[in-house]
Amino acid sequence: MLSSLKELLVEHLSTDEPEDAREHTLQLATAALLLEISRSDADIQKEELELIRQRLRDRFDLDDSEMDALLDQAESSVDTSVSLHEFTRVVNDHLSRQERVHIVELLWQVAFADGVLDKHEEFYVRKIADLLYVSQKDFIQTKHRAGYTG
Image (cartoon, rainbow, N blue to C red):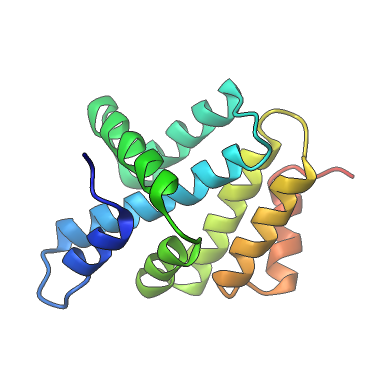
């Protein structure tokens, strides 16, 4: 059985950890946050999953087998996680403010991927943005850049 993200954090976030292990932990946390948004309305759409795959592939330069393994592990981590803090802590520890803002924009893109912004999706994007210390101004700007027209 795949280990939970919490166990991965304990294992992989030491200062003498190899760079590739830290990168994998960041990939896992990012994938988990994107999956959380797709799951938030209890109706995961094909468009959302395709967008998640595309954005993760672009961001982390993953091939198909690496992507499948990452998404399987992220899904398992989401299933066993206690809170979003497990994922946002990794992102906060490893990414700059601008990169965290970009993550919020990706969350909005996933929320808009099926053409419907569900209130639960919006709630979770807001919650994650707050946990990533993204300002209200950046939160609104990323929403518009991602395609909000309302």
